[in-house]
Structure formats: C-alpha cells, structure tokens
Length: 490
Ligand SMILES: [Zn+2]
Image (cartoon, rainbow, N blue to C red):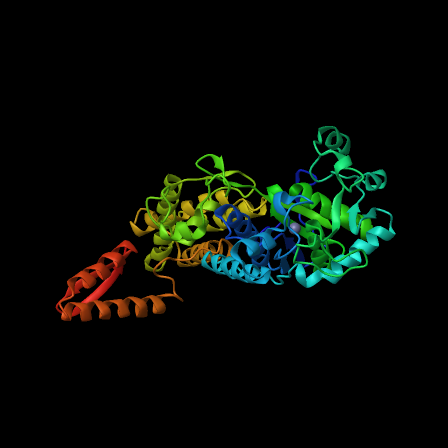
C-alpha cells in the first residue's frame, strides 16, 4: 500500500503543508502562462515544465485535475508597469503586423515547443482578450466596494484603502510602509494617488490599437486583472493551487490576491507555488543582455555556448535533476552530464525484460517504490526521485550480471514503477526507440536510405555522403552490407 500524503511548499506560509484539496479527489490549478510577443526562452520553459510535472503527478495520484494556464495576449505593458507600450502592440508595430498575427505566431510557437518537451496541454487555455467582459465586471465590483478609483478614464486599485481592511503584501512578505519608503516614483507625475496603486483599467492613448469600450473609457485591462478573472471564472472564487515563475510573486500575484479579496472578499488560493529561475553560466537569463538560450537553439545545437544538439527530453531531464524551487544553472557541461545519466536510465529500463528471475530477491522493491513516492510527496522532489531511479539502474545491472537476484514479481514491480515515474510523472521520452515513434522513425530513415541509394546510383556521392554524415550527426548510424542498408541508433 502506497502512502500518498502529499506536501506542498506554500509560498504564502513559507512552509510545506499537507495538500488537502477543496473537493476531495479533484484539484483546481491555475498557472500564469506566457505573454505571446516573442519566443519563449529556456527560463520560461523551466516554469511550465515544473508545473507539467506537478500536473502529471497529481493525475498519477488519481486526482481529477482542472489545469488552467492562460495566454496573455493584451494588457502586459513593458517593464511590467502601468505605463509604456503594450508588448504585443509594440512588436506588431515594429514588424508591421496585426497584433493578433503576433499573438497567433507566438502562441503556435509556444505550443510546438511544449509539445516537443512532451508537456501535456492544460485543460483550459483562456486568453486575456477573450475575457474582457469578465475583467470589466471585476473592475466594477472593486469600484463598488470602494477599493478602486477612476482618474481620467483609467481605474486604479487603491492599495492604501485595501491595506486598511486587509493585508497587502502577504505573499511577497513586503510591508506597505517599506514599499512607500523605497519608492522612486513621484506620485505627482502620475494619475495614481499612491505609486503602489496599480491599474485595473487603462484608458488607451490614441495610438494604442488594442482597445475595448468600457464604462470608463475606450481602453484595456491592467495586466494583473486577467489572471484574477480567468482563474476564478474556471476554478471558482477559491481554488487549490496557483503557480507561476518566482518573478511573478510580486507584484503580479500580490495584486491578484488583492483584486480577488477586494472583489469577492475571498482569498482566492490555498497553495501558492513558485518555480525558480534558470541561470545561464551563472547569470540571469535575459533577452536584453544576450545571456539567453531558446529551445530551438538547444535542439539544433545552434548556439555558441553549446558543443552539440540536445534532445528536448534530455533538457527536461536536466531540469528535473534540480528541485523546482532551486535556482538551476544551465551550461553545456551540465547538459552533457545529464545526457549520460538519462541514457544510463533508459538503457537500464530497456534491459529489464531480459532479466532472468530468481527464486528470491536481494532488493526490497516495495521499499524502493515507496521511496519514489516519498520523494515526489515531499514537494515534488524530482532530484531525489531521480536518485532513486539511478539506484534501480544499479540493481538492474547487478541482476543482469548475475551478482544479485530478483523474483519475477519484483522485476515486474520494478519495471512498472520505473515506467510510471520516468514516462508518466516526469514525462520523459525514449529518444530513438520510443514505442509509438519507432514506426515513424523507421519510415523516415527508410526514406533517407532510399534517397541515398538513388544519389549513389546517380554517382552523386556528395549527396549520398552528406545524408550518411548528417544522419550520423543526428545519432543514426547507417550500415551498408550486401543485403542493403540498415541503421542503428547511437
Ligand atoms: Zn498571471
């Protein structure tokens, strides 16, 4: 019997708490999705893959999970602030495209990248522009409750007023007095009563093309508002888990709490989860400094920090070798080490079917299986889980070499457990010999072999050699014999 008391580190209490969903057997989870104005970088991917693991593990435990992850397609201004240009509108202006062309392009790109990482799609993927009415309704509710004010067609959240009745800053641990003392923004230059106030609705400047009519002005919603509107619409005024990147804790998530409490009077989230950032060679990833890597560069090896291409599943394995709340440094050496570990794991898994069962077991499979659950139940501790999976590879080798013995039942349990955690929970894929993909691979390589044979028949050796060499680079080794050409995977 597996003990399944899951504990989740709650960013708001700063403690690991036993997970008790509001509705037994069901989980509502909201994760802040991407702002679709550019390609997602690896740092963004780490956040989404962390929550993919959470989603997968909750499902594995038998929960019915409604996972909502939004697409921000309006309202997210430069510098995460209340002034400046909308990120999508700016990109559209620079590229002379419609904003919705930008949105479409980068939404498709995001979905493709997530699919390459074998991340499951969320249950609902709502967009900010699809929920303008819901956002306006919340603005009105907050106005009616007296926690917001209108100025020149814009509506701002009154942080001071809210803080008189509730606590502003409880997630980030910031005190309003300190925020006021440390602020550099001059209130006199702004429509806001206080620099800490944030926009719920912004009147659109004449050049701002993404705009909607409202009782206050033709304008657009503040960035924080969409997540309050979409999370509560699909998960209820109170739901189980809200996730996002660590950088969203303040102000974004703090503002979400304030908006929900001001409108419905209910604190919206039971468990706040934040995934930590990915650094590159010890420095924060940022587009502006160029210290940045895109998933496509990783998959193609086309970035000067990389010595080779890495499969998406290897990059994912690398990320799960760190706990989601730890900072993880991305480097070529670390990826190469992870690739070795990943291959060792896959090799051992592939050996299980050929193990010869013995009459007794030298390995306590039940205790090992429990330890895998214990790792994941301890705030999704994937690095510890992976360490246990490596323990299994050692026993597989020992049994294969005849140094240890395992019964048929234990071998079956070992295989099932490795399968559950490697493929279902971590969502890894067997590169090159995945059951579902092997047919596709056979056909694809078969086609290339045929093209190479045609080139050779035409004495076009440059092409035939190039096909062979490029396949080798991709890990496919061609072998010619008098019976024809076969291939093996490196
Ligand atoms: Zn959000």
